[in-house]
Length: 192
Ligand SMILES: [Zn+2]
Ligand SMILES: [Zn+2]
Image (cartoon, rainbow, N blue to C red):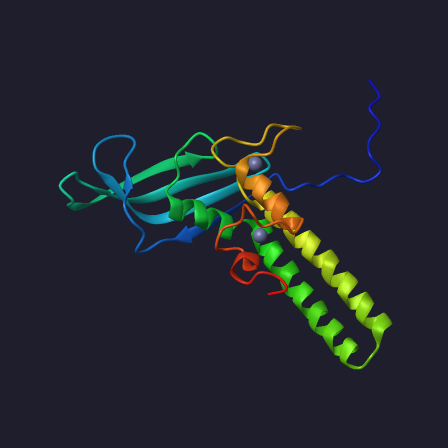
C-alpha cells in the first residue's frame, strides 16, 4: 500500500467545548430516579454531529428538599427533550453563533461606511462598502444556520430541511413569513 501523504498535514476541529457555571436556573427532572436536579454547571460539547450537554447539580428530593448529593445527566441532540433554557444556552454559546455575532458587527461597520460615502456622493465607494456588507451578512446567516440545531423532526440528509432550518433559509433569502418575534424584519417591516 502506498497511500500518498498529503503535502501538508490537515487539521480540522473535531469538537469544541465550554463549561458554564449556572445559578438561578430552574430544576430539571432527574431521569435516573426520583426528584430533580438543581443545575450548577453545564458542559456543552459541540461536534459536527451536534451538541451534547452534561448537566451537573445537586439532587432535590421529591418533597422539594435540596440535598448535597451531586447529580448529573446528559442531553443528546435529537434524542433527548431539552429544557428550553438549556437549548437556548447551547445555541448562544455555539462557537459559530459567536462567529455570526462578529460577522454582523462587521456588516454594521460596512453599512456605516457606505452611508458616510453616500453622504459625500462617493457612489463607487459606497457601492463597494454595501457589497461588503452583503457578503458579511450572508456569512453571518450561514454561520447561524450551521450553529442552530434541528427541530425534533431533523433535516433529511440531502433532502427536506427541518422546520427550524426551513425558517432560517427563508429568513436568509428575505422571506419572513415563518419568522417569529426574534426576527428584526418581523418587528420593523422593511420599507415601513
Ligand atoms: Zn435542520
Ligand atoms: Zn426573518
